[in-house]
Length: 455
Ligand code: PHE
Image (cartoon, protein in one colour):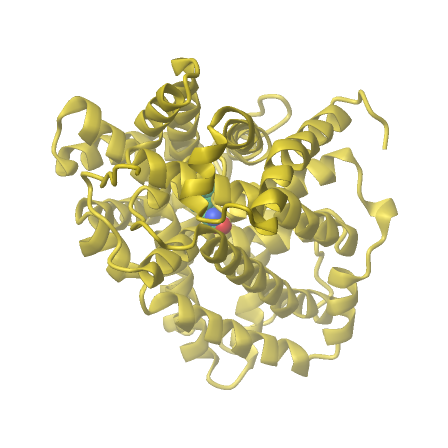
């Protein structure tokens, strides 16, 4: 018999609560802001296909692995890795994997919060009628003027960080769980409204073709790396967010099933966002490759023109902010859980420290869009660098080691117990994917980018 450990931070009240929270973590700016713009930058269909393959072959097996490791370890990722390594008789330096995760989460949140701040300010822009009846040029100018102002970006970034810390302070059930209950379904419904609008434009078919007709000449090793990195980013994998959520998961909840549901919902939201956005891009002769401003330059055009656009626009950005909030809390939770466990500080204090540090680093991203826009390191602005470093390098590296740990280091008996699927073809398939396919795929994509392979 295995002892049943519980997390000192609390537990989800049900399987449904976990699904909501994990979906809340997965669905966020990655789906609605990032997926469309990187799809636009990387030429559409072929990129989407590679992304979908990465979700299926790398993302889902690693999500299962991270959840089960979390539930077995029942602590922050750093301490979970330490105790799992001990259980498996492996070297305790595995706990550094937890460290990489904590640091990655902190780096991601620093820029995530700035972009979420953009969404917050767009709630008010929409509400005040700034988009009503306006055309492409006005909407583009509005956006450019906004990101050119450091003070405005700092204001919204600060507000978003405070909101995040406020939810995290309340702890597992009080804060995290309540925050996601109603928001996810509403966001989904509103995306359907947007798809409805996209269908009414002349460019609907063109938008669909762009997203689903693969043209492989448009992608190279870097696009493949971006697609793979995004699979990790969008599913919240490789940095311990899903691991720490798994650690609050009650026993006897099927980890495989919940992972499929979470990954399915996440992918559906991303695809719907793309289907809503690209027809607007083409109908207005905009560039699909216009970068991080894409949704802020396209969706307001639609809101400005459709009936009820003021309400739909305002609601949409409100829900986007909440989707971002339910992700941002999972980005900081591993650090907070660790501070509470190892430094004996209150949750309150842990949140304040972690939040302040993240806020400060976020200023680098704020200035990337204005004061420091010409300052480049490795040919990238601070924001681009943070994004590349985390999504394309650190998350896949973290995920790679999660797969190796679950597949090769953890005792088979232990993963079987957590998944409760001994002698099952599903278990066999998972183990095959996590031992061979996922790590090899990550490795090959890296080799390809450094030019060792030529695709
Ligand atoms: N998955 C989130 C999104 O798509 C971002 C995120 C990444 C959250 C990593 C947690 C961990 O917006």
